[in-house]
Image 1 (spheres, rainbow, N blue to C red):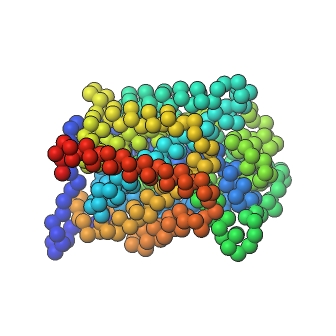
Image 2 (image 1 turned 135 degrees about the vertical axis):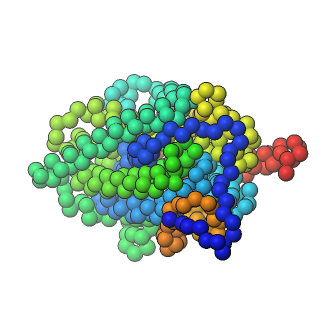
Image 3 (image 1 turned 180 degrees about the vertical axis):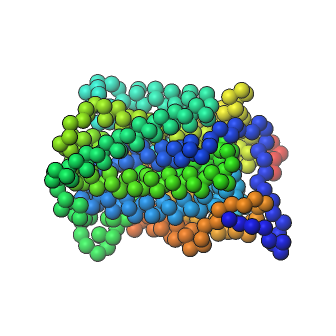
Length: 457
């Protein structure tokens, strides 16, 4: 915890947002479930097989490394959200640390794009093998994706309390699905089913640099399963006593999901050949089929659909709160911070991100969109880890969590390595991310011209 020092500059607190304040409706338990539900979902339910295709039977290794990397950056977020308990997350921290509006906008835009690419991946996972198990492929996938995005937007508009409570239900369902997978794995281990020797196979196409690059590439894609804890900081203005609530909520959430992920990866590789996992958009359904335990496959498909829907819900909530926070920081027009009377939800932000999600819902493929999400956020995480060190000179009047200095240094270095070409990442990911950044630069230029025309500084 930080304490006041009379010899340092006078402390200050983050300013209050203009206009009506958001409703504080999220307590400690809701926040923990929010973080767990935000991290769980599309990543583990849909990209496990794609990670296996990169690394082989040692599927657990990228998830274990990703767990450590996530904890490093989560610690930086905990310090910053305790220091500045406001919506906007990484954009707010970047602006306060570097005071470069252009950099702030690009970071915020990258976070928003990561949410949209993640939601698109969730939509593709929703309309893939899990849905096919129920419909036999008879339902147009794009139509289904559009309808559930619209339904989630309506829930988001209704209120944060309703959205977070729905998240609790979805989280419990998706946790149940992963417990079922772990139960199947335990039964298989006791009965001698599966292929334990596969757990040590590293199929990265060579040794030395090829092995190193292959493991990094698998970790970078697998890191998609860990993104989400950063979304919770955008709910800071709707959380009760955020300085006390967030450290516990984020650390418990990351620890629970990281442990579950490593165990699920072990079970998946134990029971299902790597090639089968790689080819499936519903890899955990393959685990159920191969486990030798009678469990209704259609019921598990329904659980998986809840899981990927939850990812979409959380990303829509994050993006809309990001718009609200940026509007209050004057990075976006003030209209983006407009709150719906009565419901007190950021209506303009919700409508804006819903339209963007509908535009992206039918693009790309799961692995490419997942890796794009990871790449964008790894770049943002590098900035956040540096920002936490820069902002040590900026004191606030209240106590807050303080991360040991070596951790954000390691967090920045690991994020940069995983975002670099050292990771075996396809060129298409860099091209897609580059196009998104160029689009952000174009929007920045347009916004600057509009503000100048209106006489704003």
